[in-house]
Image (cartoon, rainbow, N blue to C red; front, side):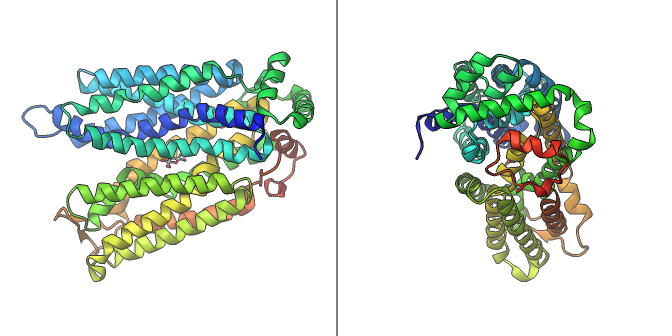
Length: 480
Ligand code: BGC
C-alpha cells in the first residue's frame, strides 16, 4: 500500500518527469514541422528546401543535446539538481519561442540548437533527481516515469503535428506549444526540495532532513540518513571531477553507462522513431496517411509497454527485463530483415509483416533498454560525481543517436544485397534495408552478452549499497 510519503514522492517524480515529456516532444515534433518549413523557405524558384539543409534542421538538436549533456554534469554536482532543472526549463522556453517566432531558417536552426541544449541537460538531470529522492523499493518505477513521459511526449508531438498540418505556418504553433510543459516543469520544480543526497553532500542537513521526510517512509528515514552520511564520510578522499571516473574502482561503472547507451542506440531504436513512415512506405503502404497511422500505433505501443516496464522493473529486476527485451528485439529485427529480403516473394504481405515486426520490436524495447538504460546510469555512480558521470554516459547516448540517425539511410545502401532493391509505394527502386536490420540484430546479440557480464542487478539496493559494491572492488555482475 502506498503511504503518504509514497504518494508525495510519486507527485514529485511526476513534476520532474515533465523534463522527459519535453525531451520526447521536442525530438518528435520536428518530423511534422519540417514538412511545412521545407516548402515555406525556398530559394531561387526551387519547390522545396535543399535536403542537406533539412537534415541540418533535424540534426542540430542532437548536436545541441551532446553539448548540453557534456557541459552541465559538473554544474549539477555543484549547484544542485533542482536549480539545474529550473534553469533547463528556462532554456526550453527561450528555445521554443525563438524557433516558433523565427523570421528565417537560420533563426530556426539557432532555436533548435538551444532546445537541443535543454534536452541534453534534462535527459540526465531528471533521472538523477528522481533516483536521489526515491525510496529503494520503488526507485525503478519512479525513474522509469521519466521514460514514460518521453514516450508520451513523442506521441503528443505526432498529434500536435497532425493537428496543425493544415494550418498556415502551423510549424510555429508546433514549436511554441512546447512552452506549456516547460512552464509546468519550471514552476513545479520551484516548489519542490532538492534531493536529500545532494543537500547532505553540501552540508545542508536541515533541508536534507526535510526533503527526506517528504520522500521516504518514516521508518526508513533514520537508516537512509545514516547510510548517506556514511557514504559521504568514505567519499572524503573521492575527487569531485572527471579524473575519479577513470580510476580503476569506477572503470566498470563507466563501461556499463557508455555500453548500455551504445546498445540502446545501436540496436536501431531511432530508425524506428524517426523513419518509420519511410520504412512503411518502402514496405508498400500507399500515400502519407497509412504510414503515419501505422507510426501512431507504434507510438501507442511504446507508451503502453513502458507502463508494463514500470510495473515490473522493481518486481523482476533490471537484468531479467533486459534479457527478455533484447531477445525480443533481436527476433523482431531478424524477421524484419528476412521479410524485406524476401520482398518480391511476399508481395503485399510485406507491409503487414513489417508493421507487425516493428510493433513487436518497439514493445520489447519499451520494456527493457528504453527505461532501463536511463535507470541504471542514475543508480551506479557515487554521489560525489554522480552528475558528471551521468553526463558522460548521456553525452555518449546523444552521440550514438546522432551517428545512427545520420547513417541509417546510407547504411541501407551500403549493406544492401545487389538485386534486392524494392519498389515501394514511391514507385522508385529503393535500397533494401534488410542488411541494416540484421546488423542491428547482431548488435542486440552482443547486448545480451554485455548484460550477462557487465550489468549489475540494482533492484532493491540503496544507492549507497551500490556505491559500496564498487568500493570493495567487486565485479559488476556480483551485485545481485
Ligand atoms: C531513447 C531515445 C528514444 C526513446 C524512444 C529513449 O530512452 O533514449 O533515443 O527515442 O527512448 O522511446
